[in-house]
Image 1 (cartoon, rainbow over the protein chains, first blue to last red):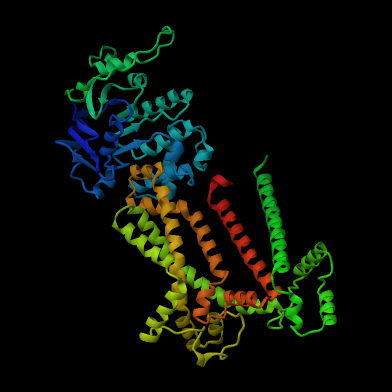
Image 2 (image 1 turned 180 degrees about the vertical axis):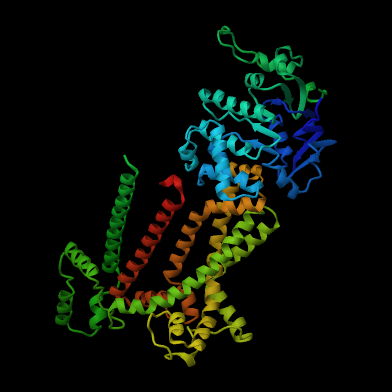
Length: 278
Length: 340
């Protein structure tokens, strides 16, 4: 097996002043694959994503191993982190309505990633951004480049976001609920674009989501998180064979088209889930 | 509808709004003039005049006419630039105001430069260190500036920096010795002395303006600091700030190149409003420092019941604020694409 991009062992995160840890001993490795992290709100899935980029002000991050490529993310200085963020690891945020700067042209915001990491002229970064906008299937990149975030649709905004985050050709992209804010009709479109780019470029992808079906279709492997722990890891195609009662409960709570009109199962949380090891 | 047409309607609407506001302002000043407890006739003829003289002056001022007619005449006068004569000084009001305004503009401009130069960085500094000790220090510092009565700080500062240490000039716009040495061309002493090439006068004027301007600036910086802090906190809590960090921008780059850029219009607006209230005249500091400015002029006129002068002063203050609001509207249109 090729060398993993990301290895983490026993990752623990505690927010400043909090009495308990938000993430309690998460371990996994990631190759050039697509890993889904699924869990409900507050399960710590987004916290893991932001901890990898070391963007959790005031939180304490500890781990036995936190290796990204050749580098130990725990000991990197902030200055070195600046060369990691955006360049080697980036993150697609949830809602383009808020994650784009409202008073800057979207193209300039995309180009900024390139300008930040490569020595080049403004014009060069503009060209790079235009190529990338085309790669995310924006039909008229030159026109869109000069538009402002409020002038483009949510689906378009998220494509701009993808362009921005993939422009510097990173090794790992974390997609934090990339389609939750989008209309159902454009979700699939955006995901297909992301999926295509990630496969073509051999980028490792961590897809954080609460949508089991989405993860099933777009990931190779799935991590199920509950209360700051990984309760189960399994291949996406084996999701139906999940053994952990929490995962089973989540699956049972999914409505099915044409599946009768009986009330859906309600999760019956067991206190021992909080403690048992995955 | 085409963009150009929208913009045209925007501008037309703006002009309409200004016209209505201006009319309202004129109505207000007119009624202030009518409702002032001072009797304009008595102010002119004095207490001992006969009843016939009183009646005669009363009629010559048009006070026997119906109110709407008087308002109409007032409008006509204002639009022909006739603001009447000051009873107190016997000169046309407009001439008096042109004489005192430069002193105030000079002081207010210095003060706002100091106030913004102090308040904006402090506000940003406080915001990025929210709830940590720098934030608290800044809060106390600006609270002091806001709550200490300026006539008191003025006197203390005069005692300390002028009387005791002799670091700065005392009251007035320049040392006694230099008064009348420079021709009054623009009324702005700093400019006039430069035109005349009188560097001694120039430095004397700088020496005199520095203390009152610093005090005024400090007190208005309190407001600017608080507003800058809250604008910045608002922006720093936005998700696009995280995006910038994810892209690899440093904390400082994110703060200055993204968050700060996004608050510039709001900043200009509040600084302009602070500048407006400084132009309105800082009566207290002008009194303490014997600064012959607009604030003192307005106050004296109020005390003596000089109707024409008061009405004109109020009108000018109103026009200044209409102008500043217009400026901030225009800036929003230029800098914030969402308002276009």
